[in-house]
Structure formats: C-alpha cells, structure tokens
Length: 439
Image (spheres, rainbow, N blue to C red):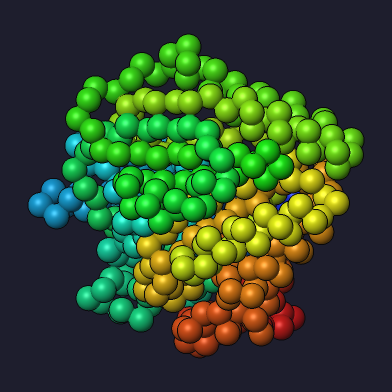
C-alpha cells in the first residue's frame, strides 16, 4: 500500500475545493483498506475516500486522512446466468464499460461523465437521462463495505436490507464501499442524435419527446431561446467511425468554442449574453451509432462549477418557464448551457429521486465568472417545488431542510450513528448535512 504520510495539497476536479490531508493511503487489497480504517479510528481522526474528485461540494475534504481506491479496481467475479458482475470500488465507469463489453454485457444506462469511480458515482446519486431508467444506484444488487470498526458487512435486497437501502447512496458516511454488484444487460448499440430546436417548442412537446426516445436530454441556451435536443434509440447497425470530420466539428464546438467564450463571459453581462447566443447558433446537428460503453459519454475539458436539483417530473414544464423568466430578470447572464435530464424514481433512502420520477436541472458556471445571484435565484425557485439537491453539486442545504425533503432521512441518520458513532467518516460538510457537531 502506498502511503503519503506528509501533508500534501488536494483539490477536486473543478478546483473549487482544496485541502491538505496529513495522511493519504492508496490500498490495493481489502485487508489494507481495513487496516487503514482501524488506524484512523484508533488515532481518533477522520477519514474520507476521495474517488475521482468529481463532486463540486466539499464531500471529500479532510485535513486528517484521505484514502484513494484507484489501485483497487477491476471486475472481481461474473455471474453469467444472471448477467451480474462484482466490481471493485475504485473502478472508473469507463473501465467498467470496456470490461463488461468484453463479456458482451453493458449497463442499461449511464451518466455522461465516465471518469468517475463506481463507488463515488453511487455515493452521490449520479445518473444518466431517460425516464425508463433510474440512477446508477438502481442497478446495484449487492454491496460490501468496511465499517468504522474495520469489519466487512455485505448487503443486498435479501440480506441486511436496511443497510442496502441506505448504503446505495450514502455520501460515504456509512463506511468504505469496497465492492459493488451490478445488474447488467446484453450488449447493445445506440444511434445518438442531436439537433437544435426552439426552447418554447421543446417545452410544449416535452412529454412527447420524453416518451418517443429511449434516452432524452436537453442543453438549453437561455438567451438564444435555443436548446440542443440529444436523444438515443437502440439500433443494430455497425458503429460509426471514431472521429469523422463531422464528429470533429461537434467536438470542436462543444469544447474549444465553449472554452474560448469564457473570456467574453468574464467581461460583462452583455458579453456573456453574446457568448451564449454565439455558442447556441453554432450547434451542429449530429448522428452516429455507438456501442453502449461509448454512447453516453460527453467529453468534459472545461472545468466548471455545477448546481443541480431533482424536481418532481410533473413540475418540469412550469419550472422551466419560470426559470426562463427568472434568468431574463437577472443582471447576471448565463453563459454556459443548462443541462436538463430525466430520471425514474427509486427506493434508495438518500436518493434525490426517492419515490418520484424527476426532472434534473443542472446549472453549470465558470468559477471565476459571478454566479452567486444566479444560483440563489434558481435555488429559490427549486425550493418552491421541493427540489432535492444533487449531493455532489454546490448546494447549501443542511439537516433542518433535508429532513423535510427525504422521508427516510432520520432513519439514515440513526443508522449512520449506529455504524459510526464517533464520526470517523464525517467532515464539516457532512456534519452540516446530518446535523452532527464535530469535535
């Protein structure tokens, strides 16, 4: 096990969260994970697993101990009859997709960012888009985790059901998830299409558009009255070439143009508005056939801050129209497209989609371009319809508010206190979320 027992600087992917943990470990075996948990507990310190650092909130910040599972990865076993795989927690979604593709399997749905680890993605309720599908936690059939006393606990729908419902989305507060069993499906291909459309027409037809396609999501450019509709449907055709001239133009538009427009967005609200319109009007139409492991991926080379809320699906049309009015009333100009996705409800206790189908609205922003008023106005709107924050996004919710939003919140807090009475796996951010005063 590699140990870094001297202070070193760590930051999340966006660069918004920084800390200097005194100790960092990179275990390669289950026994090393257990030993490191016991050591931190015996020393009366705290420990956070850092995953890929994709969260925009300080979920992983710690000046005590960090643990990286980047060397604890890969598929451990396969149940061919049931199309299930046990995978180690440090495995990225990209590696997982490639490895199960070799077994002629795939995940039925996936998020757009595949550089995250499977355990980190589960911990925060990460999701893709498409109402037939839940978030990643809905694919989990079993978990193993190391508890604060160093013991290993397994759970599933048939074994330790209470722990299973709590641990599938746990913010890393119950223990160190070491292994995840996932339900897969037969390998498939998708035709991925995108096109430009007006915002008003899209909102009017939103229900039909969701139903017409296997996966459906939107990227909305508020000041141009334009959305990019991105949708996929299953096909049997051969995959398209990896990077055709047209695909290269799409990539250039999404990444190079977006990054260069940041300079305009910094100058003034009017420049930001112009930048958004310029980006929107250049959206190229796109159509390609991709294997399942590649179909959901949207490259992310521009580092942004994100705020996301999951709202009741039946509020989607009205909230989007209200958000349009709010944004036009703000002096702050939205310079990065808003992401709108759709997720089926599930039964994980801390899932933002707990027992309700959801529309998920994500508001990206450059960290160095003023966005506090933008986020505050959107949050006020989302709060009116009992919006639940994405745990990995830059939200400000605390226990007093969260208790009313999550029906099983108190049960989760009770179980957390039983499994980790001394708060080994907490940090100040999680203390505020769960209403725990840290000493």
